[in-house]
Image: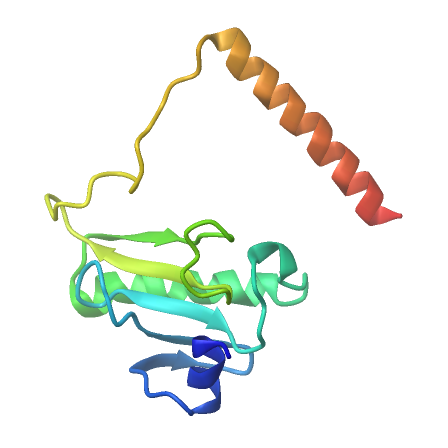
Amino acid sequence: MCVFCDIVRGDRPAHIVWSDDSTLAFLDVRPLFSGHMLLIPKAHIATLADLPDDLLPAYFATARLLSRAMEQVLGAEGSFVALNNKVSQSVAHLHVHVVPRRRKDGLRGFFWPRTKYASDEAMSEVATLLRVGIAEMNSKERR
């Protein structure tokens, strides 16, 4: 059973803030800050990689709408918009966190330690590897 699917069906209570044909947004029960929302597709889709292309524009347009609303409605100075795929994904249903931010709110950058590349050459090698892999993936998807 998926907790988020239960919310979509109305079998589990949630504080809904947005609903349309394909998406639903509700307040996180363990928020970083008041107003922290989760945006989900109504269909059970586990990860971003599984999100159908036809849902992608509307899904992220809704994330943008929620982000804007935080500033206008809650008076936030900005927002933090993020998602986890598989690792650290507490519910195996795609969800974007949209969190209101204020300067000096205590949230520092990302939630994990940052590192550095060993050298500019090492960084260039990773960039090249990714570029080649992405090009190969795109050519396979077009076939």
